[in-house]
Length: 120
Length: 120
DNA sequence: TACGGGCCTGGAGTGGCTCCAGGTCAAGGA
DNA sequence: TCCTTGACCTGGAGCCACTCCAGGCCCGTA
Image (cartoon, rainbow over all chains, first blue to last red; front, side, top):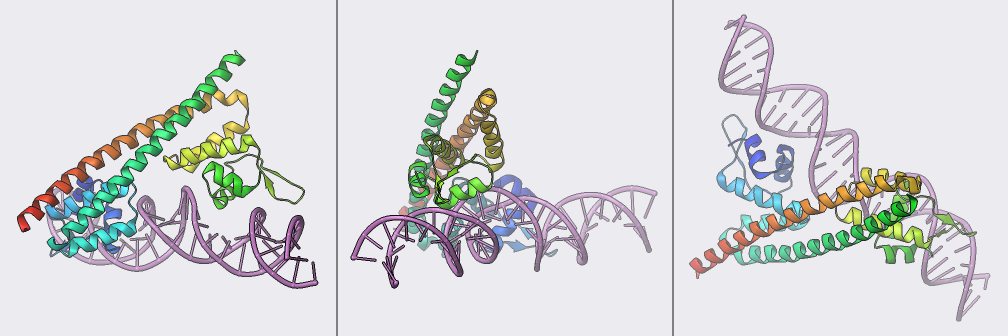
């Protein structure tokens, strides 16, 4: 599978995939005889995971660490699990932020409504 | 109130407040005779709102538009309300992203557990 | 009067992309 | 056969939203 398809499926853009490769977030993408990248199903699964981690706020530094563990193979599984569990904590924090913002917005919208009422 | 206190209360850093002022996101912060910024309660409330909007993903461009409406006074209240309602939509999308990511993580953690079980 | 602390400005640096110029290569059509 | 088209390549510039820092000013305290 080539880069445009990999982009469509993983959710990342082709540019971002190349950037991630350069930055060491993606291990060893093979090239065809035409020197174009060929993505294996495992590559795609990895990219998709990166897509979700990034989208929900994992910094690249931590993703780099995660990628390094991935390259080390099965022996790093417990540590990789720990990384994902820590990310779960971050997701909870983000949900709390969204909820808090919802409250602020509801309050603001309410006061706007009152002002509109007063004006009319 | 001076900038460090404004930062503590609003959630923004002093640097970010100055940056927002430069970028036109904060209308007219008064200066004292010492040329230092003096924040009114209204300034603080505005900064706090910006803090939450930014933290939950509103781009600066849209915040700039919002600030422009704010400067126009009460007549822009309906439009400002509309901006906040559109942001509510964004919050829902972000929640969906978090939920989706949670699912991906749960699946990954599960497969990691299986591999750990197989290895031991 | 010397010093520390808080604030100021302007500008450089950073993270995480995103876009673009200029080039290669394979396939398809005239 | 040659030409065009289109997907991909690399290296590098540009962008957004900060963040940090140097070099200065002013005020209060020892």
